[in-house]
Image (tube, rainbow, N blue to C red; front, top):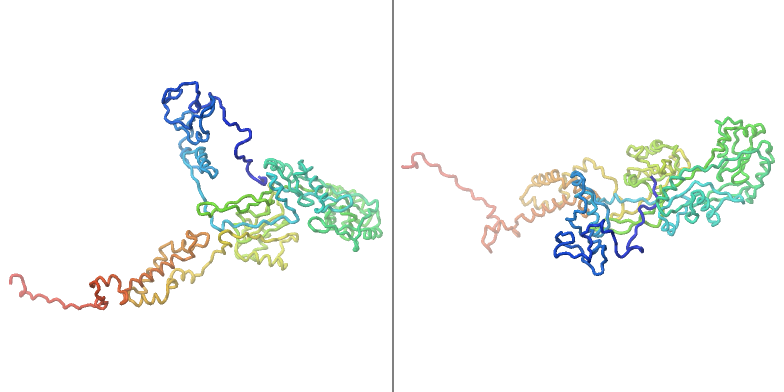
Length: 640
């Protein structure tokens, strides 16, 4: 269900004005060990019930009346007597008591933690902290409603919950002009009109345009009640149909024969002047003119022609050049003959259609925008947010899960539900590398009753796809079947910590993968490697076996070492750092262990006396031994 702007109930802190200094309670309902009566005499070491006093919570203060609580109530709450049998033993089975449950949210102080532990329903509690990587902190900049004046800071802070009400018909004043938002009197008229409909006071209404306003409430409960009661409420505005009886004179003063009256959105509503009206009446008999009153102020000839649908069985359907607007809400229609006029006036189907014209009151919840507060945690890596002073209407931001699951996305304003998700996915498929998910790649913003709000978000999985689509739309190559669509890209906020979001995961070729797995020589200095190989200590084949075996068998050199930024266990190290360090340091240690004349090493020095020159040729030399002489049988035998 839709909620108001701010969650939670009112909080209070400190001491209330009517709070007594001492809490006086009935002795019969309290554990006797918590109070005392100075008139009773206790024996040393025993209380008034004859129980042995093992320890005492709090100190008895002078001047405490009988029945008053002893000591500090907060200390008695946290330092409870384990031998207090007045506290009933829980009757839950062991299966419930031994079940670990998450610890309830509590404040930052130690007392808050202890209170949560005491009130915990089971024996075991756990607290978890989700460590999100930087990509999960992506945020979208809100796309504000066009032509809407958002409320000031004072209005936002004044109310506990706020709703946005729209769907009013633009008011036409007595001088036949549309209301303008810059006029204070016209804004007050909108506030009074919405206050009357919602049955609230006008001082809690902040006009947003000549057809919408923000309404504040003291509690979220009142906001929910109003939203459920008045959302999608029909407001009948039937179109009146009568024969033309007299000349309705206009007050136009434009040189081109029309008055251009701008509404709060900057759009123009054309009103016919006397010259154009007189020309229309002079060449059209009055007995064949139909007058339509109470039209929407922004009506045009195409709106009137749609009223004369062929399914109604009318004798004549006028063309746009046979329609003229004497005022902003009145139209004169030339039906070509008096007979057609009479049949049209007697059409019950047309009369039913004109009577069914109505406006729908749309109410959407609002919320305060989250703004950065501070970093917290032991390493100051957790971001705390607080409620800002700017108000957002439902639909100004895409769904968080939808936004994070796509690389880019844009918003469609004035979205028409007649254009389905399947139609949009089919139109965008030629510009996308992967097959589009019809349902998952598009989010249609709906109200709490499931009706579309005219806003939809479209997501893209690959970088560059949205740019191609926007370029095709601007060039006129792509059209979703509705010219009223307004498409805007969703801009992302700068990521805290890494600055910008990471690119798509790379797709390496076979050559690149083999180079990463087997080419260990790129991590070592070629001159150093040649020096080690020339020394004869180790061969290239031996080094190749060592490094290939380490790269293939040690998983820390694969998935862990090559993880991208935001997913690394050691974010301070670049990709492939550990394997490159293994290769380079292994070769450096071999170089250090290779004996030379300048640095023979400890192993060579141990064969010579202290101070004696080390002769490597003597160590490396090999003395050939003479073969052993065989014993002559019978000559060197034992006993001879």
